Amino acid sequence: MDSYFSILFNEVYKILFLLVPVLVSVAMIVWLDRRVWAFVQKRRGPNVVGPFGLFQSLADALKYIFKEIIIPASSNKLVFVLAPVVTMTLALISWAVIPFDEDFVLADINVGILYLFAVSSLGVYGIIMGGWASNSKYPFLGAIRSAAQMVSYEVSIGVIIINVLLCVGSLNLSDIVMAQQNLWFVIPLFPMFVIFFISALAETNRPPFDLPEAEAELVAGYQTEYSGMMYAMFWLGEYANILLMCAMGSVLFLGGWLSPIDIFPFNAVPGPFWLIFKILFLFILFALVKATVPRYRYDQLMKLGWKIFLPFSLFYVVLTSSFLLYFDLLPGK
Amino acid sequence: MIAHSVFFYIFSLIAIVSAVMVTVSKNTVHSVFFLILDFISISCLFIMIGAEFLGMIMLIVYVGAVAVLFLFVVMMLNVAEQKGQWFSSRWDGGTHIPVGLLVSLIIFFELIIVIGGWKYKPDLLNSLSINISTEVTNTRSIGNVLYTDYILLFQISGMILLVAMIGAIVLTYRERAGVKRQSYVKQISRERDEGVDLVEAERNKGVKIDA
Image (cartoon, rainbow over all chains, first blue to last red; front, side, top):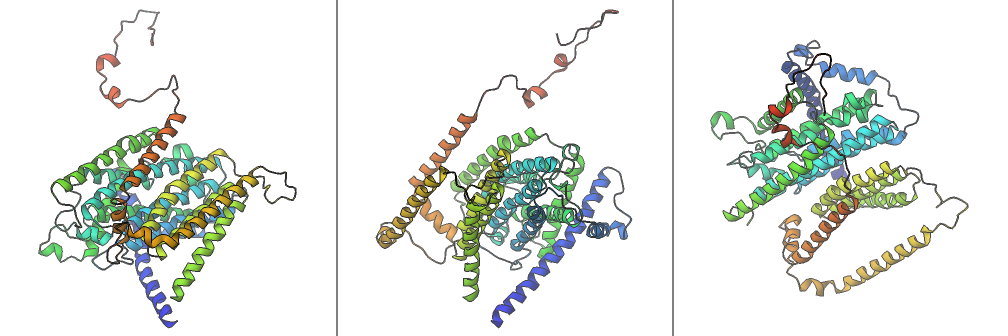
């Protein structure tokens, strides 16, 4: 029995060691997002609380904690309370499989990439539950939009993942990174990287695909009826998901923890830092897109997902596999 | 192994209870939520017996896609509140109970046949080239079997799904007149001459547009 408890305590300590930095960086990333957004528009952004306004998110969090949680009388109360919990839990559990360095990963499972894909496809439930349980028109419309959008773009993300897996021959995330030692997949699979990036924007409901919470049409979409800490949990979950998509992009295409060139000043930097740099790079791209691109119309969004991305990525699967087969480069033989 | 069996019983209990709740709960949306819970706990059971690929595919396909569409349809059709004739005191001789009993009887006999077939499993397996080793991951071994011994069945099932998909599209497709569609090609290839028309307007008469 003692051994069970020791396993339990060891794992809890490891999980906390992973989750606390993730949550802190989510708070910081919100600040970064607002700052980048402001700089693009020649504003200053949050710069008052703490040095450079770094503590702005903490102040916001404090405000959310002390606000009253309002549960609408006609809502479905259990589902209404569960929705933000589901969103946040799903956003956090997927970090378990992200490899920060060789042998520096919480759960080194065989089907890591499938796990990531599965958990991110579950993320839609938090939104649907929130929208439905609010029992109000705007949240419901937002939830319906979001469900259709996330299911559509998941399909093309799945096909893009197949492209990468064809080059790796394993579903393990560490194997995927190790397969990029000589050449990051962003070079041979560059079109797939672009499509992955755009699909990740749609999957996380970021602008220009933020139709589920389009403030001009739907107030705040599925979050309309939420307040206080429950709203903050939606918000944390959303940003944790964005970070996760950036991490997924860096593991799949940008070589994870590997340094860009394997020579002295670069390979002396520890792996986790490289991964963090890559995540930040992708995140700043996310923020720049948010600041510069106008929102899509809903039919344009669906057309882009089903009529352009899906056929093109399927075509690329055929291209990649025929290339690998013809030049006898198929892995795992 | 104690922890293992504890987790097994937790997941199977959740699976059975939520499967019952799918049929019992009066709110259809709740039924779908229980169905999702059922799928998730079953995929946990799959993972526990070491079939991690099947468990993840279960999550991706059933929970991530199929159940979302269920939820979508149930929410859109607005059938949230069932009348609850199952458990109401006066049962109006509903027609779905005999049919339900028939279907469950058929499934029960099918299960008996399948479990009976286990007796002949060694004979069936010997005719194939299945070589289960603990060294390769089960993703790879499933692929090895699926794309060699069962390639024909695999492709036929793919064709059936394709036909079903096309059938659904054909059934629901209707040509609507007067729908304005956006064509990027048309928009981009528009020249100045088509868009701008310089007219000499007569005094006090104006110009008639959209003629």
